[in-house]
Amino acid sequence: MTTGTALDKAVMTLLEYGTVHTSSGGQYSFRVLGPCCRLFDREELPWPCSRLAWKSKEPSWRRIGSRLVADMASRRCPSYSVELLQPGSKPTRTVRTLFYQRFSPQLQEWWYSRHPRSRKECNTHPNLN
Image (cartoon, rainbow, N blue to C red):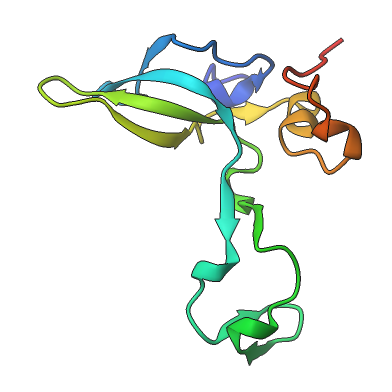
C-alpha cells in the first residue's frame, strides 16, 4: 500500500543550481548553490575519544582513520549548499540536508562513492543510465 509521501520515491535527480524551493514546513525558502556531502569531523569530538571498535577511551592524538568521514545520519539523503531566503533578513549560506528524501542506489553511489573513478574531474553529474 502506498501512502504517497516523499519517502515512497527515491531521489533520481539533482536540484538545479539557482532554483528556489520552500522548506518542508513552508517557513522559509532556499536557493540551491550546489550538491555537497555532509562530513563528520572527528577532531571536534571531546577528549578523550571513545571508539566503538575498541570499547575504550583514548586520547585525541591516537585516533585512527580519516579526520573527515561521511556523516552516517545523512548518507542516504541529499545535502545541498543553499542560501536561506527569509523575509526581512539577509540571505544566509548553510548546508541543508533533505532528510525526508532518500537516494536511489545509483545516486547514492555517485554522491558518497569510495571508488577512485569518483575523484575524476569529469564526474560532475551522476550517470543514471
